[in-house]
Image (cartoon, rainbow, N blue to C red; front, side, top):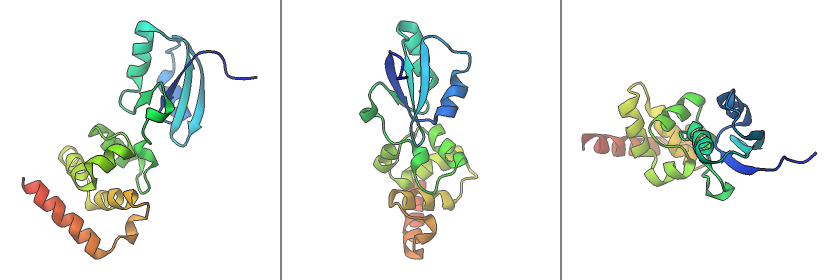
Length: 156
């Protein structure tokens, strides 16, 4: 049996997390299916106020009516665990594209201001993730350059 008729809402969150957030919502939600790694698709018939309520539920993680306009979720970045991903989301960085645009050092500064317990390991993880390598593969020279850039930025 195929998907039910309705509009699609693409969400940067796994299907099980989408189901948990939508528990008890109902208003026009027909089906929730996986859309890939850390992605889900909600098939719905919501309109007007109900559609606004539906999209508001996923405002913090990113959602779109077209799959192509939705950036890769921040959880997809190599080296990030759930806590680090949540810190980035809390800082307003929801996608890998946003992180790439802002840069690892400024992103780390923003997170560090909100989460003082964030360590340089997060900075190493962000920088290495954008290079698609393990954070332990960064050389001491690369780490020192990142640390120096952060310290200069933090003085401003």
